[in-house]
Length: 402
Image: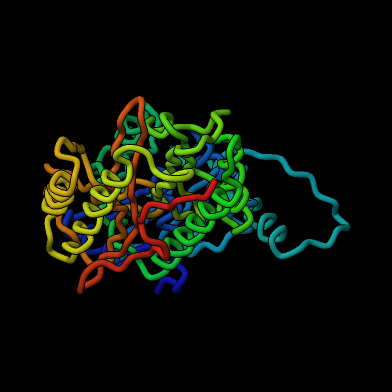
């Protein structure tokens, strides 16, 4: 039984493994390693190359196992993980004062450093699979985190095993959130809304995008989250889809576009809000209202069993009918969780169907180069009777007094 704080949707994982006739699944990407074990391997998250794995056998086999570099054992000793079996690889030297009393975290690190090591990550993974009696098993492997050539080496060292790609399967597992995941997503949504308010408190004529971004991220950090997404643009720069804050100064009548979110307890927020500095110019109010209506209509339709393509069609058609006749989009949202773009993708061509427990970002951005960018984006949970918003604020246009 996993603890209540576990992120992993244990039953869904085992059901999908059974459907795919898998004996074991191996997580390799940072998102899936953390999701399946609670282990956040810092080197794996901040750069490409470092390896960490979770070996997760199906019911009736041995217990799951984390495989990681000796250099990351301090993280394992200091984190709340729910996989107790650890296999390390590679050498890493730590000095120790023999007379010093050790705190519990350091003692766990010392104990783990005393276990046998393996030459490298792949050798450790092969050994773990073999010792689990799975050398001839059907193995689902998350191919995303492997380095070039590693899949071929696995097949060479385990010639009787049958490997099948499993990144898509794990993405499907992650689509349905546990109560703990939803709680973390609700918290980071709240943090992001508070950070937007903190940024707007300093909005005045002559303040720069960078200064607003600094206020936004400072509040995010103060609330124990980590800055990740900070697209904040004024006026004509708000029309740049991935705008990064610059020295552009705020002027009366400017649109201020926020497409922002932090990370809290490994979980992401992605929220968009629009403010104007003073009275909105031109068609801003009418266009923004159309975009808001599109999000609201999508939310009205959300419930288990609805095809995501239907959500896309309803959102786009509503925006067109309400005032932007030429409106076009490739998607109107996506799942969110430990990854910023979890399943499902709310596109016209998707065959995915909504399920209870999915957490979605529903959005209707509009970018008009040379003028402004407008966007409404909300986070919500798919419940059995419809959508439950994780937002305390509405997507209404915010007018900031000069």
